[in-house]
Length: 245
Ligand SMILES: C[S@@+](CC[C@H](N)C(=O)[O-])C[C@H]1O[C@@H](n2cnc3c(N)ncnc32)[C@H](O)[C@@H]1O
Image 1 (cartoon, rainbow, N blue to C red):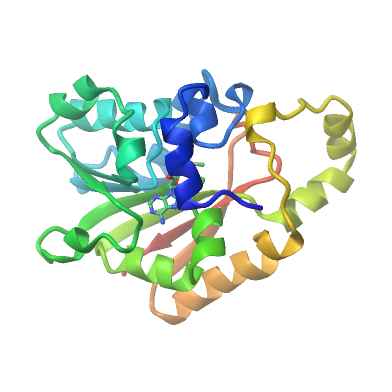
Image 2 (image 1 turned 45 degrees about the horizontal axis):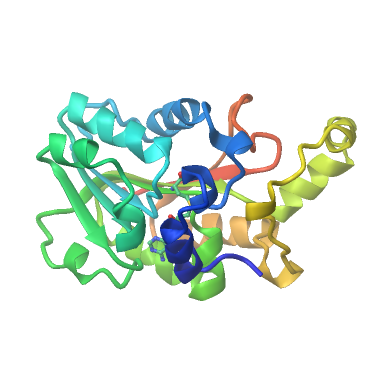
């Protein structure tokens, strides 16, 4: 069974787990690599651009990825809103949260986070939803979740739905020559994060392609992007970029 929002809360409170295990990854998948992940996110969303002033990270977690985002926003004077459970937000190092006066913490399960919708002057130029979409996929309508993200965008704003575990992409990779040798040398999952999925719980090509099509029909531009080599899931995950016209 896939992890739920409440499972992540419990993991956040479990003192036995590393900061990567708390967000559902073995250390080997993320430790020392999150700078590269951030670089890819920043490139795809154009975060360094002067036109990007307000950034929202939904399901920010508690590892070095969110720490990198906080440090970047402080350095480049961007306003940053972080959404995740109170338990998860509590783990982020206090000095990183308090250094930047532009940081806002919104505890709660998106999109039941009313505060985000209360002030239409506070829309966002870039929204990060990284390694998250598979959880709302089980718990609510994924289209509703994405719709609620898009409601928070300024014109020309972008949403990156990143690190999508598309089982069709994974299966194509596994059947390839590279996939066969990868499996031979496969790193075994750490005990703390091994999860069995049923097919109904998995995102596949049908889901990914329907997202691209559906939001184009609503007037957005949508793109399917690969991940660069060197990222932990580059061979079997992909990203969706949605741009508001
Ligand atoms: C796999 S972790 C990814 C964390 C971070 N984005 C990263 O890539 O390092 C998934 C995170 O999404 C959060 N999450 C899941 N569903 C959520 C929801 N509906 N609203 C807010 N956060 C959610 C979990 O609490 C968890 O921290």
